[in-house]
Length: 158
Image 1 (tube, one colour):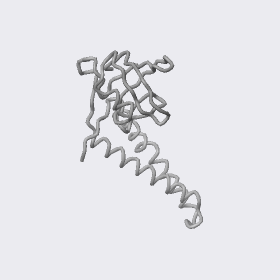
Image 2: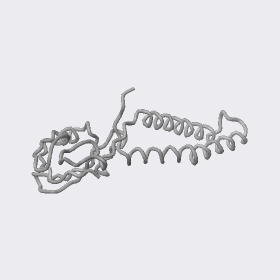
Image 3: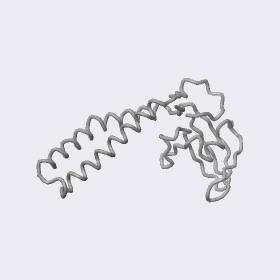
Image 4: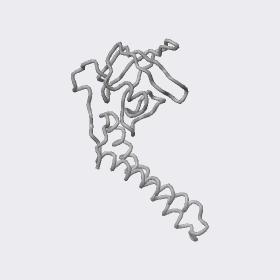
């Protein structure tokens, strides 16, 4: 079983989702199944089948989260001395050399990655390009839309 790195925030978020699934969503779907059963014939009972499908999704997600937590290698970068190098869990500010725009990314694990929140998977093209680099380093990232060039402005361990 291969350990998968995760930030403390990512672990907390997964634990909250697991609690919500177990304490809120699971009981609701069990009640919906019981109510649908009370209506009689289950073959043509759309509510029953929808509730059973939802139960399957919930149980699958519970198993998936339990597996992720069991394999988690929690990394708290706030407890690591900031050497200025980009590491897993660090927050990196970069300048796009093409249009001079500034962006900030946090380097995270697979289950936390969300580009809309600037959470970048450490094995993604930009994550791989940033890991190990320092402030003022120039990086080139091969993206589907072409080559992008960035300068690292700041590295934080927060």
